Image 1: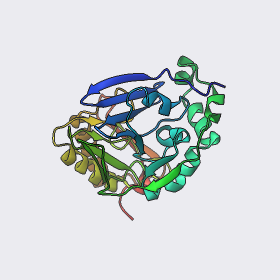
Image 2: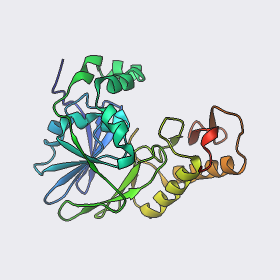
Image 3: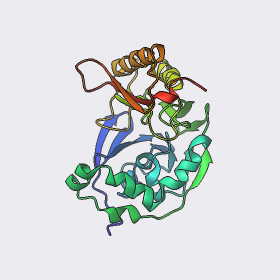
Image 4: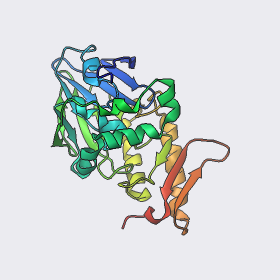
Length: 266
C-alpha cells in the first residue's frame, strides 16, 4: 500500500491559484495568500494531498470544503481539521471511511486503470479530522486576499461556493458543472438549485468560475444554458417518478439530471 503517492497533475492558474487534479477523479484548488493558504476541497485521498500542497507553499494550509461527497472531502483523512457546512457534516463523516472511498473508486474503473489506482489506496488514513462549521458569510483572511463563503444549495443541501477577493474567481465544487446532478441522496430541489445557479452568475460578475471536474473551467454560458433547462422543467414538470434527464438539443452537455419528485421546494 502506497501511503505517499504524490504524482498529482498541477496547473498554475496564476495569481497564487493552483488547480490540483487527483488522477482525473476530481480537482482541488490551492489559493495562496501572504500569510496562509486555503485548500478548496481535498479530493478522494488516494494521493497524499497535504504533502503535495506543501510543495507548492510554505504557508499554513486551511481546508475548506464545498460539499460532502467522497471525491471532495474523502481526502480529509490527511488533515487534522476541515471546514464544512453543518447540513453536510453527517455525510462527511462517512466520506472519509474506506467503504465510501472504495465505492467511489468502484464507479470509475477506467480512471482507476489508467492511473493505476488500487482499492487498497482507499485504506490510507492519517487523521480523523475535526469538522468546523462553515456558513454563509464566513471569511478567511489569507493575507492580501480573503476567501468568502456563500451558501449555494443544490448538488447537496449544504453546498457552498467560495470567492477569492483578490481575483474575484469563484470555486463552485459540483453545483454548476455542465452536467448538473440532482438525483443523488442529499440533493435539494431543482427550484432551489436554480436560485443558487442564478446567484453564482451574479457573484462571478464576469470573473473566472472553477469547478470540481474536467479542466476546472466553467463558462458562464454553460450555467445560463442549464438555468434555461431548469426553467423548462419547472414550467412543464414531468409527473412520472424516477430519474429524468433534460439536455439541450443535439448536445451531450449541458444537461440537468434530477428526480421528478424533487422539482419544487416542499
